[in-house]
Image (cartoon, rainbow, N blue to C red):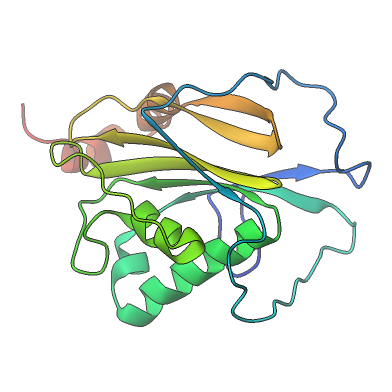
Length: 201
């Protein structure tokens, strides 16, 4: 479901779940095995110091937010305040056991020399992460249960987008075919705009 605002984010994709048993995953084709990504990090819940309280506003229908997918934009890194807000909100969503997927397709800058995930992970766990120098872009899926795990794909500009898990509940996820999704979206872009966006052949 698009065009919703969740805990300060305007997500690109929201996954909602009816208010049933939050530990029960039913229907769909979610997978129980661990995803295979280039890097996997984890943090046992409760070890991160909570810095301030949060206010959560819920929809009147009582649908709870399960997961958020966000494409990081240059605006998220445009100022110290924007960047700090983004990192803090990501950590707050993980505290609320909301699964996250962040796609960071822009090269690291002065505020995120190792990408947005490295900043979030350092804030949340105190640990560092640095992508390989030849693959500076990061795509990350956070599984937020008793243990918070980060499933990370690193890539270079021009690489095909890999599949990435989107968690619906701890231990249950669907695979996002990012390259196929991108190509399907690209095909709907009017030809005149494709000519503007695409590099000359």
